[in-house]
Amino acid sequence: MVSPAYELTHIEALEAEAVHIFREVAATFERPVLLFSGGKDSMVMLHVATKAFWPSPPPFPVMHVDTGHNFDEVIEFRDRTVETYGLRLVVTSVQDDIDAGRVVEDPKAGRNRLQTAALLRAIREHAFDAVFGGARRDEEKARAKERVFSFRDEFGQWDPRNQRPELWDLYNGRHRKGEHIRVFPLSNWTELDIWQYIEAEGIDLPSIYYSHRRPVIQRDGMLLAHTRFLTLGEDENPYEATVRFRTVGDATCTGCVESTASSPGEVVAEVATTRLTERGATRADDRISEAGMEDRKKEGYF
Image (tube, rainbow, N blue to C red):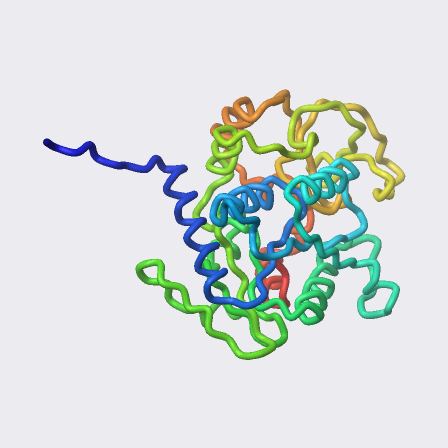
């Protein structure tokens, strides 16, 4: 009798890889933490983590680096999700660093770059030695250079020319006190993979990922939501449009796209035809220079 072949689908293989990474970290590190903004990638990470350790809850807290300029829908979703899953939430605030004089805010530049100081401060204060992030290699060319286990020195810095090999999916988490490892379980996923997984698993997301009407403005070839955090220019006039967000972050630099996709299946069909990554299409902070993301990552950014 010939036993039937056991084959994983593409999405199942990605999930199995991510489960393996979560379990490797739990077995190797003392104080891991999962970065959780309430966005789609962090929500997929959390969903996979609950599968990896079921029936026990994930053995680590979640952390949000709060710029203070978040979409209200996302913060409400974040808090509701933490309560639903019974998680411990750590919030590290950019505003605290501004108030303490550790960083200086430039209203024209937004607060995204200031998140680095808040993140590194929280890592030191809580002695986290591994930090899960939802970055994917398809998002941006600097993120495409990252290993799954990405070493950070005692200053939180990343050296793209000196990374550890990961042959046969063997991960090196060795580090000294004060150093830490950034871990990216979704490195090999694409935006389309994320949405296919969300559809297959029935994962809940903030409402702004789906089509809705809201006031927007045109700025630098992008549609930005007209929120209380956005200062209008003299020639900028808000108007209503039917849009959705491909990624969520600081409301002052995260754009939306015109869309009628109101369900995961419709988003899958939309993403399958796009040729521009979500960060390239909707993140103004990535347009500061050709190497803007890489420069920030070297300083300790996500």
